[in-house]
Structure formats: C-alpha cells, structure tokens
Length: 352
Image (cartoon, rainbow, N blue to C red; front, side, top):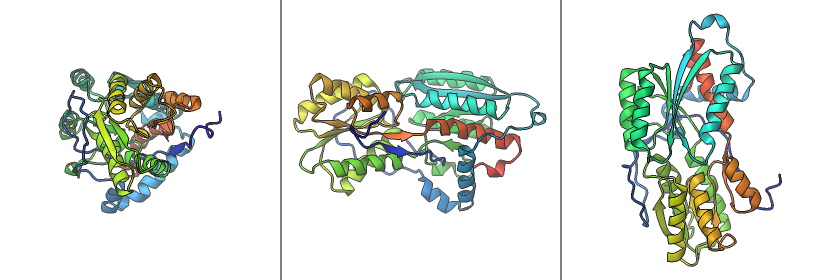
C-alpha cells in the first residue's frame, strides 16, 4: 500500500525506558480553554540516564535483545508457571494494547516459558476508574508474579505506590516513559514508546506544513499523564517554534464521541482552522467524523497517534494527514524478555 501520496508517515521505534508522571486530577468535564503546561515531578529518559549512567549499556543491550530472535530458556529452571495479570484500558479503537498482549504471548511461547495469564480489560481515558479498582483487587487476589498496569490518572498512582510498598507482585508499567522522581530507589519496570519523541515528530511536521496566520485546535485525552506528555508537550513545541495560534482545546476522555462534539465546537468557534492535533487514535477518528459531516476534510488536517490498523486505513483513504507509528510487537517482546532474564537470575541485565 502506497501512502506517500496522502502524507508523510513518521515512524517512531520503541523506546524502553522509565516512565510515570504526577498526573492532574481526573475529571468528566469537557472544557474549551487554552491549557498551559505545568511542571511535574517526573524525569525524562535522557535525564534519568544521566543520573544513572550504568543504565545506558543495560538499556542498549536490552534493545538489541528485543530485536533478536528468541532464545528459549532451559525447561529445568521453571518449577511452576509464571502468573501474569494484565489490567488494561484496552476497550478502545486503538489496537495498541491488544497487539502488545498478543506479541507478549507469542514471545513467551518462543521462549518456552510456562505461564498463565489473567487479563482484565476496561475503557480508556480514566473514565472506567470504579471498574479498574475492582479489577485491580481481583488481579491482586490471584497473587500474580507480575502485574502489568499503566499510569494515567492520580488514582492509578495511589494504587501503584501501595503495590510498590508490598514489593509483590513485580510491577510493569506500560505506555509510560518517564519515572516519578519520588519513586527513586524503588522504581517498577517501565515499557513503552516515548510520548515526547513522538510528539516532537508531529510538531515538526505541523510547524513545517502549517501557516502562522491560521489557528489550530488541540484535542486532549483525559486529564492526566497522556494529555500532559502528548498535548502539553505539543503546545510547548508549537509556542517555541513560533507556530500558529491555538484557537482552543478540549479534554475528551479519549472518547470518539466527545472528540466529535469538541471538533464541532472548535470549527464553529473558529472558521479558519488549519489542523487539529489529536492525542490518541479514538480522538483522531472522532475529529474526522465531525469534519466529514461538515465537508471540511480537505480544509482541516488531523493527525493520528500510534499508527494502528484503524489509523493506517484512514491514511490510505486520505482522511488522516499524518501519524506517528509505534512498533507494538516490540512492546510485548520487551515484557517477555524481562521475565526471561529474571528467570535466568540475570536481573542486572534488565533496565528499569
């Protein structure tokens, strides 16, 4: 499939580093307002490696392992199956979480590791918190060896700190690439794609392709980590690069319908929008729904975030202008390789 005639595809390869930021409080409100970035107590990957230079070689070597063929572990090292619980906000159009879990299972099979998986799925964007609370309780009641979770809203952080204090299960935080400084000395494992790097790619694209006299709109995720890293970072890049003015911004809770409504409000308030910056797949598709309805697809550009199947189809149709693609298979492979190295008692080869 040739997508060059529609837009330039920006490719973002996996960055396995640390992650987590102190997110803003969650809210169900959708607001049209200019939201300024605020400093949070997290450490970006480059800063963390400066603070921990020993991690540079470990991370580099681990990245090589992820890209190589699987090396099966001897059957004699396992006395019982590894139990892994996945608590995932995977009920969304983006197939990031589903692909990660699929590739994790495939790599575990290739590694000849005996395992049992319990998966708990919920909606994205911090809008399914009560359900996630129950799912976390159910997952921890299973006494798993590993818990794969994420961090987006403030309540996630509270639960993560409770798990860190107990030191079991071992915690893998997914889709986060910055560690909380307050967790220094007791960090969990982190796996994901660097939101700031991807945002920088998209900002560079729009700075190059946009004109300074027409405004743009910003469609946030929910109030929390993803919005801060993708949305606020983009806003800062545009301001630093003397980009076009911001007409307004919405929190959408990562929901397609809210993004649709937000786009209608933005186009009504500003008749000369040149692009909408979307913080996730579902948000981008909701924006496209509204633009199609108003016959504005040729006038207002929209980006994707992740490069999953739905976004690739939108690119092929010429609806979506550009996206940043994550190599989702690498994400699952990385988590499986963490477990392999720990089974082999090679913990010093696992990057934080």
